Picture 1 (cartoon, rainbow, N blue to C red):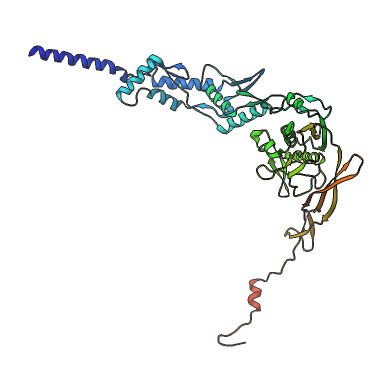
Picture 2 (cartoon, rainbow, N blue to C red; picture 1 turned 90 degrees about the horizontal axis):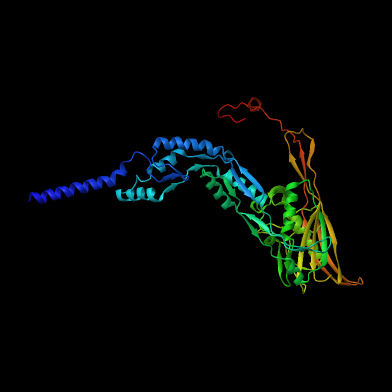
Length: 463
């Protein structure tokens, strides 16, 4: 009996000892072995030492720029430009809590896993999301370029080979920058740039037999307006080389896409509801209007087109085509028996749009204004207390509006008229003349005068 009790007691002591030996890591006063921060081993350090280490890293990381490379070009992002900092308190707490939360068994498993396999905890950081977005978008504008279809030169008629485009992924770039900020061993990032292949190649042009200039139209733009000029050039690039097959409808909005900064468009003045206001994409309507005139001269069918609310300087009355993404579009159909291609170039201050096909037109096309009526501006008067009675001031000089009818006349090679069709009847609203005037001041009767002029009446007595 005594022997059995002794055995039981010995076994109990062994079990308790084994349990204590297994549980000893649970009472460690340092970070568990194998735990690292940003791939740097911190096992064995106290909570205070972790805080000191993070403070030193904070200083080093903020002085270390992120280097972004692409081919032979390197860009720098200084951490301070995005308000970068390490959240030392949150990071230290996460490191210290590893292996100290959950059941005893789960804690022991984590501790063992860190010791045998390692466990890395990322730095917890703070940064300005808007500033990082802005930098990423600027890099995208710098590096990215749209693909260029193979085209025919409007100057020589020769084939201009296609060119791959480049696209920088903003979302992937932001992830890579944050990863680099979370590391202490490397600050190099390769820009996530992918190639974008064009739709039309030089072999496509050769196979389609498109070689002849069918129609061409040119407008002028102000190169001193940098943002508007950039929008004109970008829109021209997007429609350049667009192939339209017989019976197919060309959509300007589908081809150019949304007018957004993420698509490369800039803020410039544009005409909205009769007023010039700043908006992203100002200038795209000049490209749609220039294309409209080339399409008219090519004898193609107009499917959808809307004139502006006010006259424009770069095309004659009735010869413009306004576009608003998802609202107003310019569309035409290739009603010819062969494919055609839209070409667009900018040379100095000239925007040139041409239509190429397999052969030149066997007819002559003229676009004329058959009727034009002037709409005189109304005179709007508005009282201005700053002016003296009888004084007037022209605040805004009005401009006339117009009603115009545009006709397309088709003649054969001898000059004989084959067809005359009304293209559009358009109205352009006038700008009213605004005149301010000084109003006559009415005499103000004082309360005392009012009282003095009232007759004195005794109660119950009728005057």
